[in-house]
Image 1 (tube, one colour):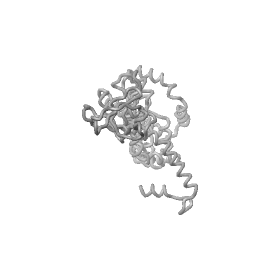
Image 2 (cartoon, rainbow, N blue to C red):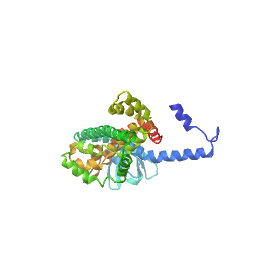
Image 3 (spheres, rainbow, N blue to C red):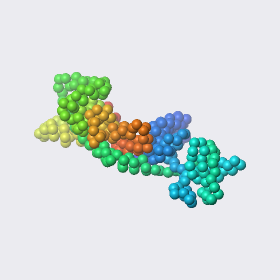
Image 4 (spheres, rainbow, N blue to C red):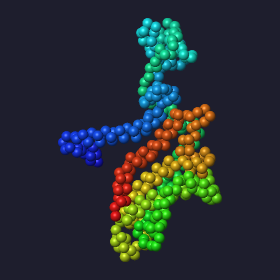
Length: 354
């Protein structure tokens, strides 16, 4: 696999020497990588920043902290600053306090020499790279354990909904691809036509149905309304069209039931397409916000996306916890995509073959 990637990346249109189109292509791809990954990298790094570091302007890419030192006569460590004296020399001093636009500092090596007061524009904080875990500790400790229930709820909805979606979509695709009956094309068009209906249009009817079934504040109230997707049915149908009908006829001659043919022959052969549908389903269920927001109103049944929106109160946005929560929320999806990405192109490409 690494050899194939290296051969693909280093191939040249002009033969041994790189053609100008190669440089343009690599530049375009590099620009795309930077545009797509820079925000993700910034969020991940910022989740390790302190609240002070997050609110600084101009913002910094790397998480930093002001260096501090223990000074004799002070109970706490004091932050270090570079101070420009009146004679133009620069000295490293510890800040005792800051009042308005003036800072009181002391020489950490000789605190008995006395304190000096200088304008803050003549001071510069001495910083160091610091990966702080305070945001994650506050996230896991200050929510009273609700974060763990949100993680469980999200995993439960994602896994159960994805499994049911795969079964329902595969059964519909099997019927539409391998059975010839009057109205099959109309049924397929009707399924695909639902793609043109925005989710917000059917949100109120879905909520009324869920409410009548008594599934409000129940995780099944989020799972059941979306167990079948038109995109999944279409992808699986197109892939199942590539499975030879002769294989199914041979199984029927051996007295295999339709259910056995479906489970033992069709599903194993449709694994690449099923993997693609599973990835799409996992991403959709994990990131779903609107339906859980309407159906789930109690904190104990919140999903991660709803909990993520709760880090805003009357005192403002808690950026540190918000970024830590965002990183934790995106991590499972990133892992799923990394380990299953090779199935995406294979499955999607195979759906167009007849």
